[in-house]
Amino acid sequence: MDETTRQATRLWTLAQPAVSAFVTSVVRDFGDRDDVLQDTAVAVIESFDSYDPQRPFVAWAIGIARNQVGLYLRRRRRDRLVFDEETVACLAIAFAEVTPQQSRQLDSLKVCLSSLEGRARSLLQLRYEEDCKPAAIAERVGMKPNAVAKALQRLRDQLRACIERRSAEAATV
Image (cartoon, rainbow, N blue to C red):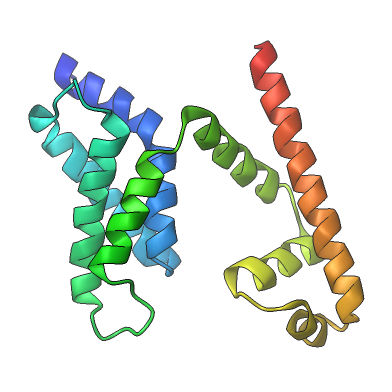
């Protein structure tokens, strides 16, 4: 591996969580999301020679991701759940401003979420992936709406504590 490819790979590895979060905010389908992110990674490496080191790499990589998302959206134009180009541009700007600490917190959230199982995982998927309200979740899982709301609050508290614990551990390393 030559030094340019090594540098591009290192910078991509650092930027990937923010770019992934941006792509995730626009592309709802998991498989499509992975494809767009992979296409973005390839485009970043292939066009690394045009990167200006005076500019923030994350913003540059998100610009490439924005182009890849645009290609994806054009292919999916008939889908009612896709964003227009102006919305995608606004999201790209917002995600380019994600700090390294926020990026680490997103990574911690992924790890903390992966440790959940059973009903906890199901409740969070219904609430945040399927955008169901507590009453609708209650019907689907056989709970009372108040119990669902309380369970979701406990899960959010648990995830927050997990993220804070991981951040504290990372700070001591």
